[in-house]
Length: 177
Ligand SMILES: Cc1cc2nc3c(=O)[nH]c(=O)nc-3n(C[C@H](O)[C@H](O)[C@H](O)COP(=O)(O)O)c2cc1C
Picture 1 (cartoon, helix red, strand yellow):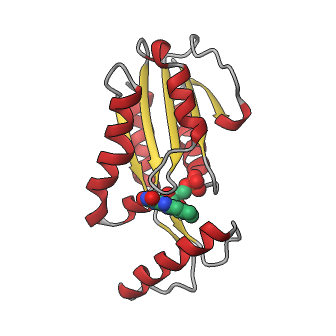
Picture 2: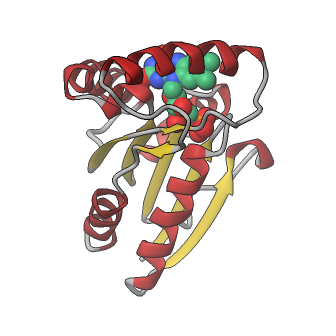
């Protein structure tokens, strides 16, 4: 099988997930291309059997690039196996996961795909008190800091809420789809 993994990532979190997904699919004996959506313009998806498209979420939104990729390739993707994933804060907590599934995955799939995706993946984010990503990031981090403090979590430390076993299992499943 030949697979394409395309991602849009503002702060690098979804990019690392995409790399892990690509590695797993490749290690299972498939040919894989991994692309940052910002580095591609017109892209020929015809050689691929499986296309994984992912994005980080900011203010409820996918990256423009990942969404554009889905829209630009809508008719071609109708004949392919397609999987979508997101990395978002909503995945980190049980109480917000359903909302994440609905708004960032199911809705995006319904609006942008002509065929049911083979998989949807809702993956967590990283809390990093020392990351330097500009004002919006800083303000959002301040909000997350308060939430984590309410839960008694040490906010002086970095916390990776991505479940790498879950991500690898998800990718492994795709590799054999
Ligand atoms: C400015 C900003 C806005 C965010 N908005 C949301 C949001 O609306 N919903 C959510 O679940 N997570 C939100 N997050 C958390 C991100 O989705 C999370 O950090 C994700 O891992 C970012 O992926 P990326 O690093 O690939 O861009 C936000 C983070 C930042 C910094």
